[in-house]
Length: 464
Image (cartoon, helix red, strand yellow):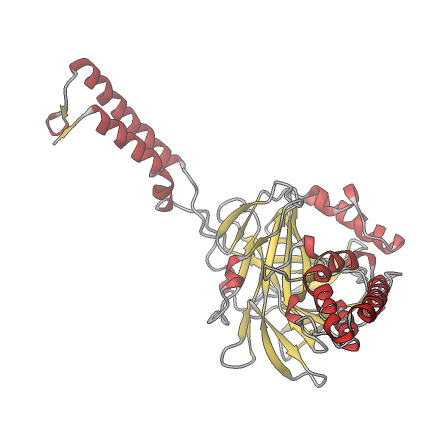
């Protein structure tokens, strides 16, 4: 076998290009496999540090505001509090689904966006079609009357965004449910504090929480079920009696004999912030809770715990994403797995926080890609697909879980947080692989030098 100079250079390049693939075969950051196999855990619970309520087990420690005030949850591995994981239920946003089936901040369902999008592409052309019915002169007067009426309608729509941190939340519990082996507590939104035309949300948005000390499987039917491991916190995010801006628009169109806008053009997004902080940053979280409870406004800037976040990366269904950048001026990115939902009823969408030390459990947030719609008696009417999008916000992640229009039904969905083994994401080049590549490159350099000296092909098999 003879290899010329060009072939040797090609081999060198191939080795370098193969490095990521070779890395897949290398050891990965992986925590104790038994983390989610624990079937039961002893739990100590009670008020902690004047602001928090705490659950503590040999595996996980979880805290949240003891007086309700805001739905914010922090947790860490009990044996290593060097990394504290934070999930904040930031708010809900009514948005328009135009050409993408997931939330994007450019398309809030507020008066300005509706006027800039639905008016020109849908509503105005439908009004113009009435020209044949009325005749031009009569239609012209009718048309401008409708324009003025529509402008007034837009001014009466509610804001698209309801910030949870600027509202009052009432905490019920925690109480231990003995026959189910979990601690139950509820956050109920009880006051929107002056957000105009959003009063309908009061007592109609709940975050029902269950902290399990025993692994439990909940089954709705043959296709819809989920399992919650011991030491995990499961939420039932519940919204009922939501008043949709598109319903007001369609009422206007019906009144004037114009075809309605399909309701699948709108949805509701749950905005969740994911961050990771260190132990000394708990004071910032405490100050944020107290500030918002006192001033009844959403904290900004350095008052927010996200300003202390050190999240570098997040693994979204196994794919790494750089959370250290600030990309909030760009469109949100879709969680691709939620866009391919058929036959996925038993699967979950999981987001791991940045990988820390090896063999130390890491925090995660996950959810199933479906939600239940309930009638007035609590019976399941149907299951709807759930999508999601996300964007890096400079050291933390904004996640938007997106629900399609659900009319007058009650929406129920189930995010979960906890600790798990570190995700099996390969290190790009570990120490052993680096030594192999250096050695291989050194051999190639020697061979290339020999080619230059001898100026003829080298028979590698003959080299001793």
